[in-house]
Image 1 (cartoon, helix red, strand yellow):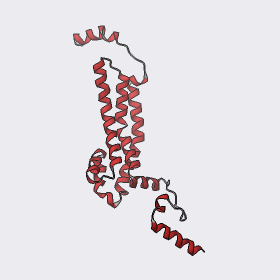
Image 2: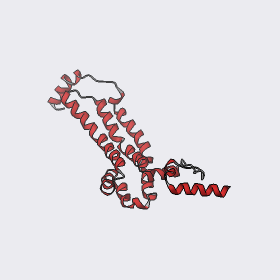
Image 3: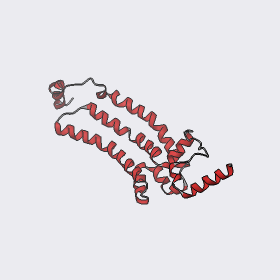
Image 4: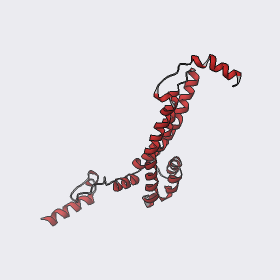
Length: 186
């Protein structure tokens, strides 16, 4: 062993406050990462399938960017359409938060001269959640994808023909249709 390293281990390392916290161990980083991947992989594959097979015709221009990289699709959506604004904000904030928070934790630890392995492992777990959160967001935020998910998972209820939504009540044509139905029934 190098003399400097040997002297470090004999003098400085023995004075370190070692924590027995679960997050400090290698298992605290490895096991949550494996669990995240077990949950994220099917959702990411499902997102890939939804984007590949269920993308409606008006979204065909963003189909391949979604498949290549979710972050690139947010930029593409922002350039082509303003009604995706909420989705864009959510979709860009997720990678920013998951990619920026771990380095900020590290910078804060360096500046305060207080290194905490548990916080670093927590930051890596957060970084590992990026794919899961982004795939879930794509399935939930964009209406065509959410409709496809509801159809596939049988969450979509069949609409009662006599049911009238509050949005359709505002349309004059709807009132004509209701009155014609009433006349037919009488």
